[in-house]
Each structure stands twice: as structure tokens, then as C-alpha cells.
Length: 135
Image (cartoon, rainbow, N blue to C red):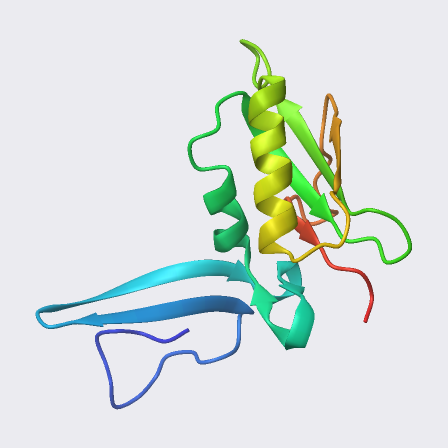
């Protein structure tokens, strides 16, 4: 992170752990924030799957207020979600999510989906969307 107004003398520069993709276009530059490195997952051949990519699976799905994805090595992965107050997702939408995540994460077996009343924040007060297994 650094100041944008003084390119000769950075104010602060340190790694904050965010993954950002720079998209160059002829007349503009766009940045996509993919989320934290700590919340990303490694799948086959070392490919990284980011929070932003996972969020795209939920893009047109209604009924989910919050989710959390947990990688488990010796059992199916777990996707926990808090349903919206006006009702949770339909079984068809849950199937769409399960299929989309299974494909994106290149899973050999479908992940387990579990509804919950609350997803607790970390001790820092922040919510983690992804919990990769310990490497």
C-alpha cells in the first residue's frame, strides 16, 4: 500500500495479503480485488481459486446472506450459509451452487452444504469466507 499523490517517496509500503488483478484496456485500467491470499484455495496443478472467483458462483443466487467455504482433506468440503431473513435459497439454487463450486474447485465429490443461523467472526472482528486446509 502506498500513497498515490507522491510517487517519489512512498508513505507506507507493505504487503497486506490481497490478491489484485490488473486489467489493461486501450483507454483505461481496471483492478479486480480477488480477496486475501489466506482465503484462497489451491486446486490441481497449483491453480489458485480466489474469493472473487467463488463469489461469481453466487452471483445470481438469491436467499443467501453470508457464506463460508471450508476445505477438508479427508471428507467432503463444507459450504456453510446463513439464509436471508425473507427465506433461503430453493433446492434448485443450492444444486446450482453445489455444482458450480464442485466444478470450480475441481472436487472429486460434491461438497456438503449446511444452513446455519450464524457464522461467527474471527477474534479480529472480520469474517473469513474461505478456510483452506493446513498445507
